[in-house]
Image (cartoon, rainbow, N blue to C red; front, side, top):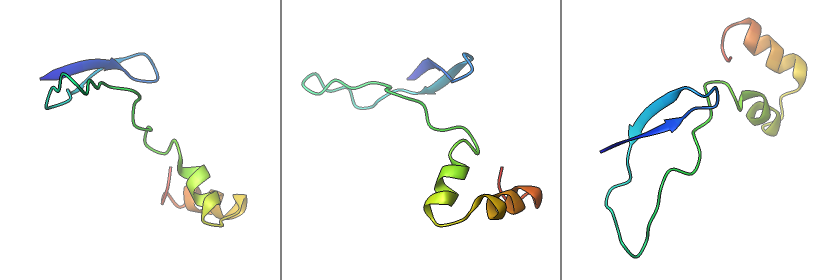
Length: 64
């Protein structure tokens, strides 16, 4: 079963629905996964890289 959700830019996206369906534990799609590169700067800062090091990785095409 596929479920249609809106991605951050508003486009619809078909994603797998939640299986199994449990009557006592209903669930659903809460939020989308981050886009490619969306969290890169935050994660690299968390592991200790500074802005110049992050920019160098971007310039070399290693990260987006």
